[in-house]
Image 1 (tube, rainbow over the protein chains, first blue to last red):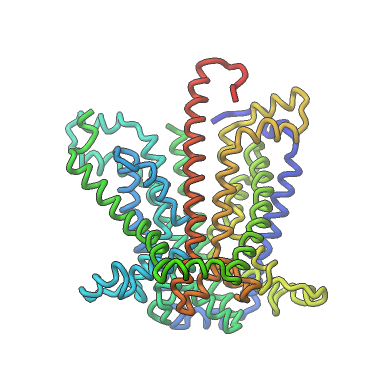
Image 2 (tube, each protein chain N blue to C red):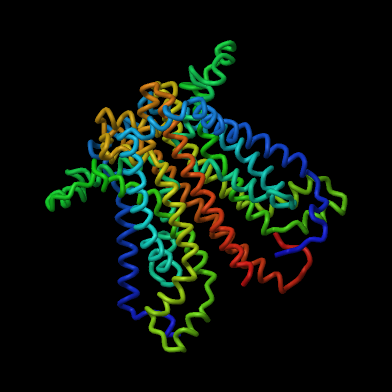
Length: 278
Length: 288
């Protein structure tokens, strides 16, 4: 880290750029978001709790959290594997594979959604074979899980990859010299070092999955109590002009998202501090 | 270094499992989009893409991106300058606040603008008095899109500008350059790839946003229908070939985005290597 004697420096433009940043941030993000809380606060406590404790709402929260959690888990495991393969091994077409990992960030979610639905529907490329085994993917929670895995895929790869790249091979050498097997070295030396990055990636994927709408609506079938996710329920309430209901559910979700954001920022701050200390 | 790698059979197993996973979740859907689009022949494909409603959706999508992206670029540059070139209290709070739109579900992003500007919204009387429509109209789509793409440019620029430090700018200013000139001549050339990177990501999301736009648009054909919404409408009408045909336009956009992104990454990597070599060379003027 570079330390400067003057705390602020003497470059011009701080007032202008900072002022603009604050004003724009307030107008576009902070004030609109606070309207949500304002609207929620006009509801009575009983009304608010009554909306949230509805079986359909609770079911959608359960579906959202379960599917997002399992999608993030799958991404954590395969994210580490993909990052490892991309950093450590050489094979043809590696650059292209590396580039395509970001596809879920670049492909509009609606396109991803209809593509996955066509693959996993009962007459789809994969769906027809799974159907023979009696496994239904599209229009079940498994379908939601597939879609959420798709949109969360890049997160763990992209948080773990740079850590692996900067990783000092001497640590592994030391472990090998001391007689550790390759698996032991990975499990005891490499993995603990990667853990903060894995957790950050997991949390990012989980947070993204919780709010995801576009890729899920097509594949989920949207059956209340079974395959209805929270963002979809908010949408349904809005279409029925039930603004109070939509606001109450959105408030709960937003609070969960904010907590997730704080955890992620804390983890990233921890990783940076760890890196700086080395 | 034999002890630092795995036996070949383990290496290849890991590579194959990783490629299978990526093939299943990324490449297969991409292939599916193009295959489904041509399922009823090239005639249907061309007809769906040149359809009047599709063209008006293309126009609206381009218009929305043409407004949202520059607005967020301006913000991103201002925020990066303030955050990366100066020290102040509460910097981490400000960074977290800039990240907020990433933590908000797109549907909620749409909802807050409905609560503000909808027919029962906070600003409804004002809008009625001026006879100005935001929700179920183009301004609402622009607002929602700008909200969800808000952090992209700032997030890419801040770390790049921070890594650059402020020595070069301070030198320029102490030699008498104005702040504006310093930015254009010193800062901008140093961060141009980071900026472009942010613009590309911001643009891809702006053109592809679905959830937030879906809430505020009202799906009025030929009027407030963006490309992703048009895909949804066609799909829900069981016009699958047409829906996938329109989706290929967006998939092509995604592929172009990924290619540009890889090129920029490759370019900055090379630049970083060159800089490192030059570091030991001379401390004079840098070539290029």
